Image 1 (cartoon, rainbow, N blue to C red):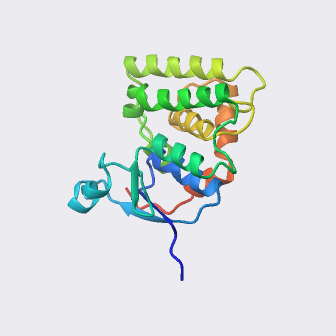
Image 2 (cartoon, one colour):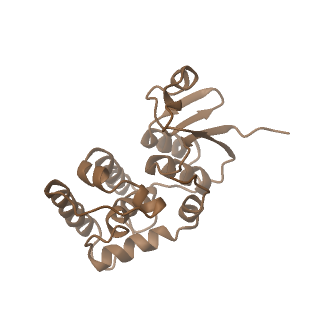
Length: 210
């Protein structure tokens, strides 16, 4: 029996938005892969075996024929270069750059939202109290930027689906699923992305109890 050429290391609770993006990319491209769970709660990402594999000691990490790569944006771009069929990025260079900009921004900014609205809200139904002033400012920035990126009538960031739509929807859903105020058209956008079949696969994965 042949073995999958890809091995994807993800968090055991399946709450990492970055592991989710790589999982969806692999599935969208129709690639055969094995998933390995890493228990971040017990520090499995800091064991000798994992630190030899993952330079950053984080998830996701992808192993491809002996080549190990960490950081989701690097992994997605690697897969896109290797398998341009069923693209997860736009073909047009400017549109491609724009959605990559969105990805980089979501990873590097809006920290108060990520701290006060963890993905336990999205994947476990947890709820948290009112946003702090810093998180309120971050939420206002997120909403203003999303509205600028998605003019009235726009279903996607680049005219058609890309992996960045999933990532933006997840960030919005941190607020939406907690009951925080988000404009209706952004709620509709996030809900539409959430119904993507590959997103639903990840959402419906079995998770251990908290």
